[in-house]
Image 1 (cartoon, rainbow, N blue to C red):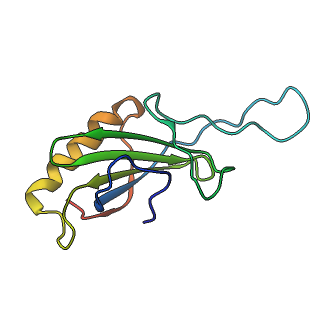
Image 2: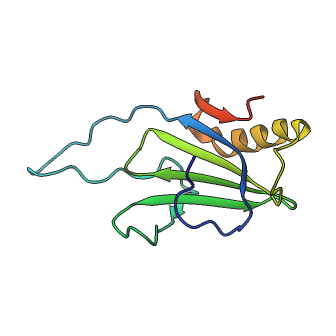
Length: 126
């Protein structure tokens, strides 16, 4: 899973979750033309420019959790997907099984305003 934007943490992504967002209604167009780009699904998501492509609209939220960092990423080009990353200084190991429930509960607390979201894919799965 490629990480979009620029993360504050330089730690690698050790675990990730891809969530499917609910479908949004089509925007009401008052004038002819292309519809405006969608807004991010959560208020905590802030613009996170992609240095290699300034046209890309990526929004992210990163939270330091002590020995690991939680990052949410949303790409306006793929508005139905919200990605969560677990970043930690584990360079040659996978996320320990004991840490997976902590990661999932942290993600659930941040996406609570959206309601329960279906998981499209995850590594590792609980």
